Length: 389
Image 1: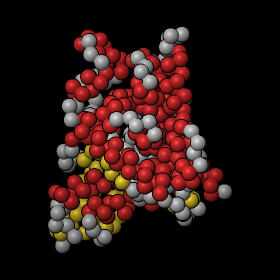
Image 2: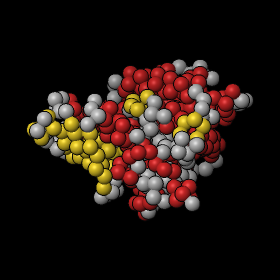
Image 3: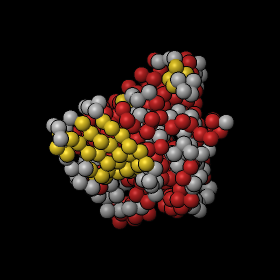
């Protein structure tokens, strides 16, 4: 499996696959060919269908530091593919063929990036559990042995997460003209009375900042960022949890997100919203169980429920904006993550879990492949159609 730190990337919203990924591809291209004065960019798949709503065109221009960029679009596949060609005067540079894989991860045929580097030999949670048993170590030791620099990276991410929520809680007014959507995080926070109210307000704050193109942290994507970010901010701000403990929580969550990324997908354009919000719910549920001193079985059970009850969740953002139903859905599923953790802790001394985490990830992958393309971040079906009626 790849590094956990790749699940937590810092970049600009509103979409890890449609802004962070293309930004990185364009940035690498400019670094390789710094003297170009104009560019041609081809966008395919979901990148072509929802480029406007996701802010893809502006973020590519920002990475290239150039306004002379011409775009062509073609929905030629399910993959988020992107070709980029630079020109210096009349001289044409090499065309790069890139893929945005979800969560900000990319692949470029003509350039080696570190996203494909294998860090863990184990590729499933069952394999990880066997390794833990064979070496008599716990899950955190296993993670930090493989990624000794992970905690430093996670502390940077936590700073961005906190600032994201604080920024979102301060702002009011119209967020999106086309949808007539107004920010509500500040009002939600002002009227909050308990933990659930705070979590909802923090989730809205993060997602509203994301929708406005603010500086964000994927967790594991930007479309699902409000789930783990609201949890981290609540524990840090309202319960005074230490940064070290929060880093450990993100590390635990990350191992489950990594297993999903390895054996299914975290990209809404490939697996629907079960791949984004479902993964984030599983990650949050697992680490809430850890936070509440659950054993490894309870932690896995919580993660399994987080995915199981998101199976089939579609990705159909209205007009291509990461707003409806995305923002409300994030707030709902941080609450569901607590439910999953609580159930796993209640069940641990009563019953064995019948369905393993790995099994439900396999079903998630199967379900994502069966979803119609219209329901996978294309804005061609689902709520998007109802909005136009």
